[in-house]
Image (cartoon, rainbow, N blue to C red; front, side, top):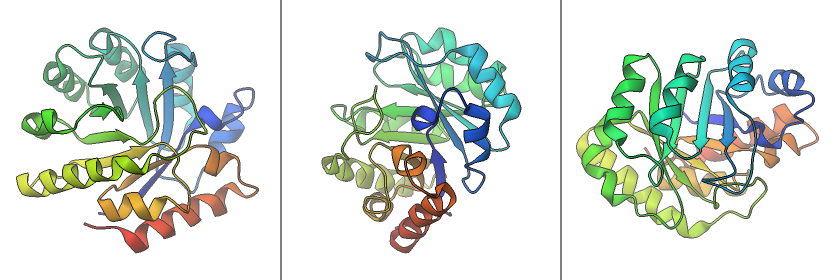
Length: 221
């Protein structure tokens, strides 16, 4: 399985979103952070903006819900065109039911794990999900320092996916750069979210290529 790069528009210019979406044409996904000022302290964008991004994006949309009550709201984002919807372990009441509902709507389901949360409790329901997101920063703000103490969690998750014979992808979000990409890829991550390392670079295409190449050299299947 090849490495996928998902630039986070949290680091884009919100006054020029369409321009900044076009700028990441070399990537594989566009990562859209939705924050509600409750589950996390920050507030970003809601359904109307996400719907429009899904309409104009040339890349598949990876919508990351850092919100309360995703059981209620996640299907709305699927209905608005999201290719993948991520919801958090600490926010959902019925993760399997929600994952199945998203699948019935033709949308991929992803489960997210914060740094303080163990990944082992979801091993029994791994087969319900297309992707598991391991946060390598605390959710809520861009530009944070990479938490290397989460690499063990990525390894344990990849080992369990292999043991079960699944095709579940492992996504990492937080502090990803050409320097840290080999670390997460060597641990078993194959979807890398990068915000400031992409949008803060002088050449966005070159930044995406550098992250991809660094990860592919180190990736542990």
